[in-house]
Amino acid sequence: MPELPEVETIKESLKQRISFKKIKEVEIFCAKLIKFPEVLQFVKEIKNKKIKGLERRGKYLIFKLTYNTNLVVHLGMTGQLIYSDLPLPIDKHTHLLFHFEDNTALQYRDVRKFGCLWLVKDGCLRFVSGLAQLGPEPLSQEFTLEYFGNILDKKSIIKYLLLSQSNLAGLGNIYVDEILFRAGISPERVAADLTPREREKLYHTIRWVLEEAVRARGTSVVNYIDGDGKKGNYQDSLRVYRRSGELCFICSTPIKRIVLAGRGTYFCPKCQPLIPSSGRGKKV
DNA sequence: AGCTGTACCTGCAGGC
DNA sequence: TGCCTGCAGGTACAGC
Image: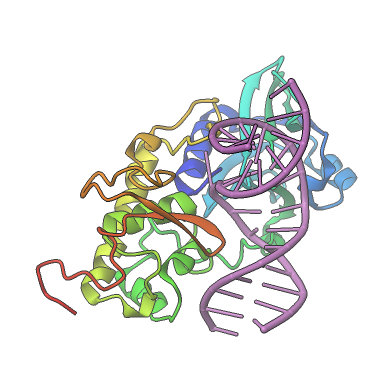
């Protein structure tokens, strides 16, 4: 489900609700989602810890708890974190229930169970798989045009490169396709072959699309909802994702679907040509 | 080094 | 109605 804008929206919606609450206990109905420590230890250690704050890094949510402890959550494809007063509507996809001292609760739902949870001390965040290898946040100052230029100097397919979390943290399949469409770059292009002009366009498009999507509170294609159970709005702005066969909003060419990096990839063959686009008639 | 295929899970839509 | 196939926002890992 969730890429950077969705996780950011969940973080913001939950933050106001659960900050400074004390976790009375946790009920676990699907143990395999807990990656560290052992389930019994997890239950024991989280008990009576207070939530000091909530952070996001890439697609990871990090609950800052008292006693230098961190609850790290990755939502996988279909994970949801929903806060509410008791009694909560529970179903077979509810796998964890965090009970707070004031009788409110946070539930973790996940249809496909690809999500993961870790409970680690401050110095041990590197033991959370994937977290330490994350590249810079695309909306931070750390993500400069210069840095982007360096990672683009690879003979890698651009779609693959943008999906790799070690290059850039937080992009997923929807936003990569949408970004490449808006930048007019074919997902099949080799990164190192992009012209300086295309690199700059792509850099600014990444930031612009993500900012727009955060402002729209994320994309709800199938089952994404925020911490209050509300849907996002960016699905109304999608121009290629899941539109195969439908006409391009710019040139009316049918949108194509291919498989790249193992993912369904949507693009307009005319607006995103395989040859570097000239912009103003300059042929390459 | 870069990339593909596969695995992990469940649900849904579409074809027959 | 049922059965089958393909598709789905995630990552990890083996193997070319």
